[in-house]
Amino acid sequence: MNWDEFAGWSKEIADWGAQYHKTLRDRPVRPNTTPGKIAAQLASAPPMEGEDMAAIMADFEAIVMPGMTHWQHPRFFAYFPANAAPPSMLAEQLVNTVAAQCMLWQTSPAATEVEGVMVDWLRQALGLAEGFTGVIQDSASSATLSAVLTMRERATGYTGNREGLAGKGHLRIYCSDQVHSSIDRACWVAGIGQDNLVKIPGTGPLHGMDATALDIAIRNDIAAGHTPAGVIAITGGTGVGASDDLGPVLEVAKAHDVYTHLDAAWAGSAMICPEYHAAFWQDVDGFDSIVFNPHKWMGAQFDCSVQFLRDATPQLNTLKIEPEYLKTSGDAVTNYSEWTIPLGRRFRALKLWFLIRSYGLEGLQLRIRNHVNWAGELCDAIRGLDGFEIVTEPILSLFSFRCPGDDATQQRLVDAINDDGRVYLTQGAFGGRKIIRVQVGQFDTTRVDVMAVHTVVQEVWEQIK
Image 1: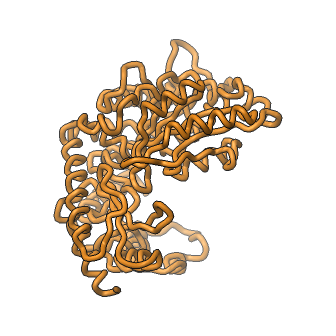
Image 2: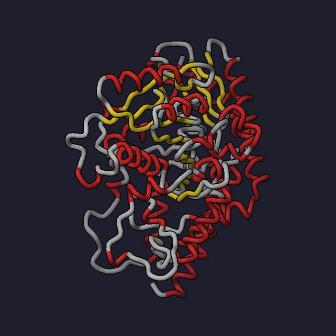
């Protein structure tokens, strides 16, 4: 392909993209396919000669698109969406075209400096104290793993990377029983182990970690000869939106001198709205590490997860490695590859710059406030269905319910709703029972889209009950 052909196909694909998004409501949210069906349509061996782009695009339409789940569909209410606002997509097109590897300041000075400013814009937007710095990670999982590795190194006097963990006893990490599975995985990968992740039961209307139980667990571990290494709190757990009361959790953690990390992956975006701070964000400035995902509720193209650090030194002491070929001469600069596990880095900050400038904080706030309000309306409508139970009340834009019947019936209803294709929901578990989750957060969803969930649930239930 020459560059004239590239320009022509870029225009074709841009037009295709606009039409795709404008007609998403006409498509089922999930594909009607079976395992292996897409793979069976692909050639079993690579072509020896190049093919025309028109043929490739035709196969894309015929083979790939019928097998896609449409994450940008305005009636996607499952998981939490990886959003993609149009300005963010345009920024990604530029990033893909320039194709820079932004591991060091000298390998892309603009990428490094824009990232620093964008992290500070978001610090201000979230109301975090001056002095917090940060880095853009690929996902909250990577940010959490970075924090857990920092907990490990700090607790071992920064000897774990050099000496390994043999003979260092049991390092313990503490969290709510409502945390995301990425916390468990971080403990696996960091060598701490699942058995040393202590999960504290949630209590109260926000299902947050019991600070008294946390303190008892830490004291018991110290008495048993274990080493408390860190506490991980949540604002907006994935399951039902569980959120810890941050002040009491921090008080316990500080009393025992352990490193703290706050996982606010999806709910953190809502903290650009000051009215939510009292319930979810009090004392947040006491945390050593905080992560939230602009690629979820805020509308940035995946992947874009921001980790804030009250003091970057412990994480740099954990992750920085500087062979001669990566050293930077001259004036002191920031090399963000020293803040993260991967060496290679994409120019993720550009989409934040485009996004925030295009909508302004007020435009982004309006979307989030609408989603929270519409989720409350939908919850009340489902509450009114005969025999239905609201299991967890809305926490921001997430709530859960059950239909009449046992756990198998809940799964049967979820599957039937998703097979119907008009909306997409997921199941979950809470209090030992299966639940049906509803979250509202797709960037272009409307009140009509949200209230369609009530209609679909009611109609499908009538068909299967």
